[in-house]
Each structure stands twice: as structure tokens, then as C-alpha cells.
Length: 216
Ligand SMILES: Cc1cc2nc3c(=O)[nH]c(=O)nc-3n(C[C@H](O)[C@H](O)[C@H](O)COP(=O)(O)O)c2cc1C
Image (cartoon, rainbow, N blue to C red):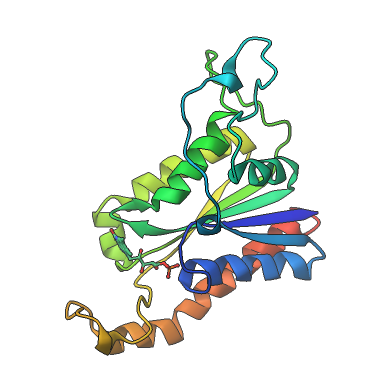
């Protein structure tokens, strides 16, 4: 059992990476082989519309033909038994790097048939973990949830199953007194970090364990 997590935050040990690490710890506890990939370590681009993955009888049909640092990661996902994407919310959506990664990961498997079909050969568990500054009520009011739902739907269509997990009102800076961020109540943020973030970590851990468990 192989479980891969892909971190779409430039920060390797902050909110998104922590939750992904917890999910992998849960999976590892069930005996899975795990790997955390940091997208910001890689040099790659999004889909370039070459359509090599769509060419009739083409040698790259169903496989992204672009060769860069993402190529080996896409191959690992192809062989994984479950994968978990994670991204901070940047201006209402996932980070640019994660968006580029998704374009390459998803487009290769999606057919332009009617109805659309998937070329991914198996059904595997997938998930998306989102982290953001806003609290739950604003996450809903700003329409973020609709975006999460769309990602969940496309991941389900292609890989057979998907779920979303979100962590709101995250602690963003090492030291709030050193940045101009009067909008935030630092103490409230610190309290939430201490009391509620561990619950998000627990949910991630349990999801990872579930994915790698005997019913996963
Ligand atoms: C460029 C940038 C844009 C952001 N835009 C939003 C946003 O639109 N909504 C929001 O809730 N948080 C926003 N944030 C906050 C991050 O989503 C939040 O701090 C997240 O938990 C950071 O993840 P990390 O700790 O894994 O890096 C933004 C942060 C940055 C750096």
C-alpha cells in the first residue's frame, strides 16, 4: 500500500504540510509506505495544451507528455493506492503551483468522449486538504466551499472517490507582533491554534489511517 501526499504550500512545516504529514502518519501506522512531495521544490509548468495525451493511437495517449520535475510525481500517483493533495487558499482558490499540478494530473486521464470517461485504471481513495485564514462562516459566505465541491467532483470522476477536509482560521505568522496584521486578533488565533488545530490534525490522521486500512 503506497500513499502519497502533495504539499501545495511553499512552507514545508506549516499548516498544510502539518496536516498532510498527520495523514501520512495515520497511513504509515497501518503499514503503508508513504511519501510527502513538496511542489515548491520542483520546477514544472501547468498543462500546455499539446494534446499528446488525447491523440488517437498516440504513444502518449492517457499520459502527460510534458517532461519536467512533475513527470516522476505523476508516475508515482499513477502507481499509488491513495493520494492526498493539500493547499493553502490564495485569493479564494488553491495555490498557483497546486493548480498547475492539478491541470497536469487530471487532464491526462479525462477523455473528451460523450459522456466523459476516465483513463485512470483503478479506483483509489483521494482527498484534498485546504487551509485558510478565514473562519468557517466566511469560508461558506465567500463561496470557497463551491470550489472545494468542484475539485471533489472531478477527483471522484477520475479516481473513483474523493473527500475534502478544511482547516480554517489558521495561524499564519511565526510572530504576529513583527508583521502589520492588525486585522487579526493574535490571541484568538493562538488559542485556536492550540485548541482546534489539533482536532484538524486528528481528522487528517484518521483519514490517512482509513485510506491505508483494510477497508481503504
Ligand atoms: C498570497 C496569499 C494569499 C492568501 N489568500 C487567502 C485568501 O484568499 N483567503 C484566506 O482565507 N486565506 C488566504 N491566505 C492565508 C493562507 O491561506 C493561510 O495562512 C494558510 O493556512 C497558509 O498555509 P501554510 O501555513 O501551509 O503555508 C493567503 C496567504 C497568502 C500568502
